[in-house]
Length: 220
Image (tube, rainbow, N blue to C red):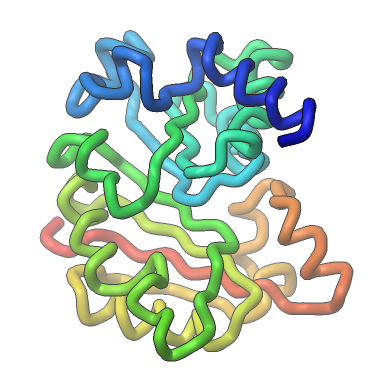
């Protein structure tokens, strides 16, 4: 393992804005994010598969009245977002190191107001479809932690994954879905505040159009 990775893992171990195995809050935070971590009653927004945290950090800068949690299983990625949040003095940001399928272990029912999924692995092979982050089994988990009417956003460059997601969301408890297959040419582009992830920068330089959708949990 490289020295850089070891340094990042050590950073995560001592940083209060990173929750990972071995820390008390990692095992006790479910249902208590507002009082035990953020110490306010503000709405909670999570980013699934946050990578280096570009989107989590970008949104937190624009919306200081909201609480943001970036979720990823890669500790070296999370460390980069954690460092940036600390360097810029952002107190409305946390990072959680875990897998998506364990998300109910860390959030109580109706604890989350909004979910972002930004450039997830499209899992393109037929054998991988069940692992897509918008597969029915994951959408069931998201519905459990989202408030009624809570929003879900998705950004991707992958056409097949986008089509799959539209159908899956429409059949698994989400409604009022709006979408675009070319975000930067769309009226919805101004909602994104110029925030781009690492992969979004790469894809746009290569000429791929960015797909975006927004929907809400049914029942509101």
